[in-house]
Length: 66
Image (cartoon, rainbow, N blue to C red):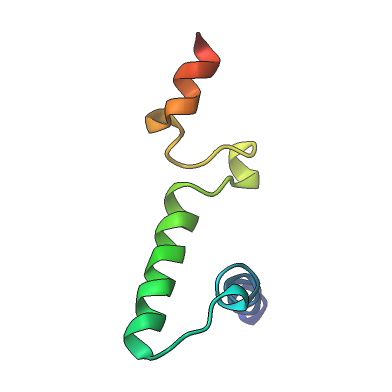
């Protein structure tokens, strides 16, 4: 379980916190909630064949089907 936590923390550091100067706790909470929303709804996942979880709502899917 520790390896999973370390991977998640490393991903957050590389993808979110490494590019932004955090000013205070509320700013950190805002950045982390935005990252969480992106990760859960838009970011491609290997388990889904590099498709985002919201692929059925994605406007790109309708373009590909046309």
